[in-house]
Length: 256
Figure 1 (tube, rainbow, N blue to C red):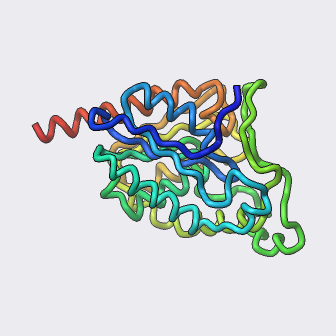
Figure 2: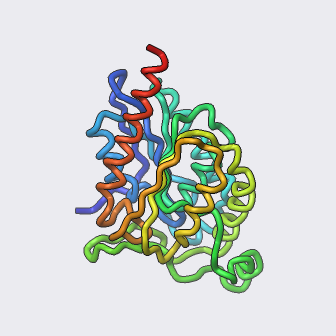
Protein backbone atom coordinates (compact mmCIF):
# COMPACT_ATOMS: atom_id res chain seq x y z
CA UNK A 1 0.00 0.00 0.00
CA UNK A 2 1.54 3.37 -0.98
CA UNK A 3 2.01 5.95 1.75
CA UNK A 4 0.92 9.50 0.96
CA UNK A 5 3.83 11.98 0.99
CA UNK A 6 1.86 15.21 1.40
CA UNK A 7 1.89 17.08 4.69
CA UNK A 8 -0.99 16.21 6.95
CA UNK A 9 -2.90 17.42 10.00
CA UNK A 10 -5.18 15.41 12.28
CA UNK A 11 -7.41 17.74 14.31
CA UNK A 12 -9.51 15.85 16.84
CA UNK A 13 -11.10 18.98 18.27
CA UNK A 14 -11.35 20.05 21.92
CA UNK A 15 -11.26 16.48 23.22
CA UNK A 16 -7.70 15.89 21.96
CA UNK A 17 -5.22 15.13 24.72
CA UNK A 18 -2.42 17.20 23.14
CA UNK A 19 -0.86 17.96 19.75
CA UNK A 20 2.25 16.33 18.31
CA UNK A 21 4.28 18.27 15.73
CA UNK A 22 6.19 15.77 13.58
CA UNK A 23 9.19 16.71 11.41
CA UNK A 24 10.61 14.46 8.68
CA UNK A 25 14.26 14.09 7.75
CA UNK A 26 16.63 15.34 5.05
CA UNK A 27 15.70 14.33 1.43
CA UNK A 28 12.55 12.64 2.80
CA UNK A 29 8.95 13.82 3.29
CA UNK A 30 6.00 13.36 5.70
CA UNK A 31 5.39 9.80 4.44
CA UNK A 32 8.04 8.64 6.92
CA UNK A 33 6.01 10.26 9.70
CA UNK A 34 2.54 9.15 8.65
CA UNK A 35 2.35 5.76 10.44
CA UNK A 36 3.50 7.50 13.63
CA UNK A 37 0.96 10.26 13.11
CA UNK A 38 -1.87 7.80 12.49
CA UNK A 39 -1.00 5.88 15.65
CA UNK A 40 -1.07 9.05 17.73
CA UNK A 41 -4.32 10.16 16.12
CA UNK A 42 -5.91 6.84 17.06
CA UNK A 43 -4.55 7.31 20.60
CA UNK A 44 -6.35 10.65 20.94
CA UNK A 45 -3.71 13.19 19.90
CA UNK A 46 -3.80 15.93 17.27
CA UNK A 47 -0.95 15.71 14.77
CA UNK A 48 0.66 18.36 12.53
CA UNK A 49 3.26 17.13 10.02
CA UNK A 50 4.56 19.78 7.59
CA UNK A 51 6.41 19.24 4.32
CA UNK A 52 9.71 21.13 4.48
CA UNK A 53 10.62 23.44 1.55
CA UNK A 54 12.44 21.73 -1.30
CA UNK A 55 11.49 18.26 -0.10
CA UNK A 56 9.13 15.84 -1.83
CA UNK A 57 10.40 17.01 -5.23
CA UNK A 58 13.56 16.49 -7.32
CA UNK A 59 17.05 16.74 -5.84
CA UNK A 60 17.63 19.80 -8.04
CA UNK A 61 14.76 21.61 -6.29
CA UNK A 62 16.01 20.51 -2.86
CA UNK A 63 19.48 21.82 -3.75
CA UNK A 64 18.11 25.37 -3.85
CA UNK A 65 16.60 25.25 -0.36
CA UNK A 66 18.31 26.12 2.94
CA UNK A 67 18.08 25.14 6.57
CA UNK A 68 16.64 28.58 7.38
CA UNK A 69 13.70 27.84 5.06
CA UNK A 70 13.20 24.39 6.60
CA UNK A 71 13.25 25.85 10.10
CA UNK A 72 10.87 28.67 9.15
CA UNK A 73 8.32 26.11 7.93
CA UNK A 74 8.66 24.10 11.14
CA UNK A 75 8.19 27.22 13.23
CA UNK A 76 5.09 28.08 11.19
CA UNK A 77 3.81 24.56 11.81
CA UNK A 78 4.37 25.07 15.54
CA UNK A 79 2.08 28.09 15.39
CA UNK A 80 -0.48 25.94 13.54
CA UNK A 81 -0.18 23.31 16.28
CA UNK A 82 -0.55 25.89 19.06
CA UNK A 83 -3.68 27.23 17.36
CA UNK A 84 -5.37 23.87 18.02
CA UNK A 85 -5.49 24.89 21.66
CA UNK A 86 -3.84 21.87 23.30
CA UNK A 87 -0.34 21.34 24.80
CA UNK A 88 2.20 20.83 22.01
CA UNK A 89 4.97 18.25 21.83
CA UNK A 90 7.43 17.94 18.94
CA UNK A 91 8.96 14.84 17.38
CA UNK A 92 11.62 14.54 14.70
CA UNK A 93 13.55 11.94 12.72
CA UNK A 94 17.19 12.57 11.79
CA UNK A 95 17.39 16.16 10.43
CA UNK A 96 13.85 16.51 11.73
CA UNK A 97 15.44 15.96 15.13
CA UNK A 98 18.01 18.67 14.39
CA UNK A 99 15.29 21.16 13.50
CA UNK A 100 13.17 20.12 16.48
CA UNK A 101 16.13 20.71 18.80
CA UNK A 102 16.59 24.16 17.27
CA UNK A 103 12.89 24.81 17.84
CA UNK A 104 13.26 23.88 21.51
CA UNK A 105 16.24 26.24 21.80
CA UNK A 106 14.32 29.13 20.29
CA UNK A 107 10.77 28.46 21.52
CA UNK A 108 11.05 26.00 24.36
CA UNK A 109 8.31 27.80 26.26
CA UNK A 110 5.80 26.69 23.62
CA UNK A 111 6.73 23.01 23.91
CA UNK A 112 5.80 20.42 26.52
CA UNK A 113 8.41 17.86 25.44
CA UNK A 114 10.47 16.38 22.59
CA UNK A 115 10.63 12.91 21.05
CA UNK A 116 13.70 12.37 18.87
CA UNK A 117 14.44 9.40 16.61
CA UNK A 118 18.08 9.06 15.51
CA UNK A 119 18.62 12.83 15.81
CA UNK A 120 21.51 14.37 13.87
CA UNK A 121 23.67 17.07 15.44
CA UNK A 122 27.12 16.45 13.91
CA UNK A 123 28.71 14.65 10.98
CA UNK A 124 31.20 11.87 11.67
CA UNK A 125 32.26 11.70 8.00
CA UNK A 126 35.71 13.32 7.68
CA UNK A 127 34.98 14.63 4.18
CA UNK A 128 31.79 16.39 5.28
CA UNK A 129 33.48 19.76 5.79
CA UNK A 130 34.29 19.86 2.08
CA UNK A 131 30.60 20.06 1.11
CA UNK A 132 30.55 23.86 0.60
CA UNK A 133 33.31 23.46 -2.02
CA UNK A 134 32.28 20.11 -3.47
CA UNK A 135 28.84 21.43 -4.42
CA UNK A 136 30.45 23.32 -7.33
CA UNK A 137 32.15 20.26 -8.84
CA UNK A 138 29.84 17.50 -7.58
CA UNK A 139 26.26 18.83 -7.34
CA UNK A 140 24.84 15.57 -6.00
CA UNK A 141 25.85 12.20 -4.56
CA UNK A 142 24.05 8.88 -4.20
CA UNK A 143 20.84 8.90 -2.18
CA UNK A 144 21.15 8.46 1.58
CA UNK A 145 17.49 7.47 1.84
CA UNK A 146 15.67 4.27 2.74
CA UNK A 147 18.08 2.92 5.35
CA UNK A 148 15.46 0.42 6.56
CA UNK A 149 16.07 -3.10 7.84
CA UNK A 150 12.64 -4.36 6.77
CA UNK A 151 13.11 -5.86 3.29
CA UNK A 152 9.65 -4.89 2.00
CA UNK A 153 9.74 -1.18 2.97
CA UNK A 154 11.12 1.75 0.98
CA UNK A 155 11.34 5.33 2.24
CA UNK A 156 10.21 8.01 -0.22
CA UNK A 157 13.20 10.27 -0.88
CA UNK A 158 14.85 12.30 -3.61
CA UNK A 159 16.72 10.15 -6.14
CA UNK A 160 20.04 11.73 -5.17
CA UNK A 161 21.39 13.86 -2.31
CA UNK A 162 22.19 17.48 -3.28
CA UNK A 163 25.53 18.56 -1.84
CA UNK A 164 24.49 22.23 -1.53
CA UNK A 165 21.53 21.33 0.70
CA UNK A 166 23.74 19.01 2.72
CA UNK A 167 26.19 21.88 3.25
CA UNK A 168 23.27 23.96 4.56
CA UNK A 169 22.28 21.12 6.90
CA UNK A 170 25.81 21.18 8.34
CA UNK A 171 25.37 24.89 9.05
CA UNK A 172 22.19 24.06 10.98
CA UNK A 173 24.22 21.69 13.17
CA UNK A 174 26.87 24.37 13.64
CA UNK A 175 24.38 26.82 15.17
CA UNK A 176 22.29 24.23 17.04
CA UNK A 177 24.90 22.13 18.83
CA UNK A 178 26.49 24.99 20.85
CA UNK A 179 23.07 26.01 22.19
CA UNK A 180 21.79 22.60 23.31
CA UNK A 181 22.13 23.80 26.91
CA UNK A 182 19.14 26.09 26.31
CA UNK A 183 16.89 23.03 26.11
CA UNK A 184 15.16 22.15 29.38
CA UNK A 185 11.95 20.41 28.22
CA UNK A 186 11.46 16.67 28.89
CA UNK A 187 13.11 14.54 26.25
CA UNK A 188 12.62 11.03 24.85
CA UNK A 189 15.37 9.70 22.54
CA UNK A 190 15.18 6.59 20.36
CA UNK A 191 18.44 5.39 18.82
CA UNK A 192 18.93 2.53 16.36
CA UNK A 193 21.71 0.15 17.34
CA UNK A 194 22.75 0.00 13.68
CA UNK A 195 22.41 3.20 11.65
CA UNK A 196 24.11 3.68 8.27
CA UNK A 197 23.22 7.38 7.95
CA UNK A 198 23.62 9.04 11.38
CA UNK A 199 26.23 7.79 13.84
CA UNK A 200 24.44 6.67 17.04
CA UNK A 201 26.88 8.87 19.00
CA UNK A 202 24.75 11.81 17.89
CA UNK A 203 22.14 10.79 20.46
CA UNK A 204 24.78 10.75 23.21
CA UNK A 205 25.91 14.27 22.24
CA UNK A 206 22.32 15.51 22.46
CA UNK A 207 21.81 13.81 25.81
CA UNK A 208 24.99 15.33 27.22
CA UNK A 209 24.29 18.80 25.84
CA UNK A 210 20.74 19.51 27.00
CA UNK A 211 19.84 20.69 30.50
CA UNK A 212 16.59 18.73 30.62
CA UNK A 213 16.19 16.91 33.94
CA UNK A 214 13.70 14.43 32.44
CA UNK A 215 15.53 12.48 29.72
CA UNK A 216 14.77 8.89 28.69
CA UNK A 217 16.71 6.88 26.11
CA UNK A 218 15.77 3.70 24.28
CA UNK A 219 17.90 1.58 21.93
CA UNK A 220 16.10 0.12 18.91
CA UNK A 221 17.76 -3.28 18.35
CA UNK A 222 16.21 -4.27 15.02
CA UNK A 223 15.87 -0.99 13.13
CA UNK A 224 18.18 1.00 10.87
CA UNK A 225 18.04 4.79 10.40
CA UNK A 226 14.42 5.26 9.28
CA UNK A 227 13.13 3.57 12.42
CA UNK A 228 9.62 5.01 12.07
CA UNK A 229 9.12 2.63 9.12
CA UNK A 230 11.13 -0.27 10.53
CA UNK A 231 10.75 -3.24 12.90
CA UNK A 232 10.80 -1.13 16.10
CA UNK A 233 8.28 1.47 14.92
CA UNK A 234 5.67 0.28 17.42
CA UNK A 235 8.14 0.88 20.25
CA UNK A 236 8.51 4.50 19.14
CA UNK A 237 4.80 5.04 18.62
CA UNK A 238 3.59 3.55 21.89
CA UNK A 239 6.50 5.00 23.84
CA UNK A 240 5.86 8.53 22.59
CA UNK A 241 2.16 8.24 23.48
CA UNK A 242 3.04 6.99 26.98
CA UNK A 243 5.63 9.79 27.34
CA UNK A 244 3.04 12.45 26.53
CA UNK A 245 0.39 10.84 28.72
CA UNK A 246 2.78 10.79 31.66
CA UNK A 247 3.72 14.42 31.28
CA UNK A 248 0.13 15.51 30.80
CA UNK A 249 -0.92 13.64 33.95
CA UNK A 250 1.95 15.26 35.84
CA UNK A 251 0.90 18.69 34.61
CA UNK A 252 -2.72 18.09 35.57
CA UNK A 253 -1.58 17.02 39.03
CA UNK A 254 0.27 20.32 39.46
CA UNK A 255 -2.78 22.36 38.43
CA UNK A 256 -5.34 20.35 40.41
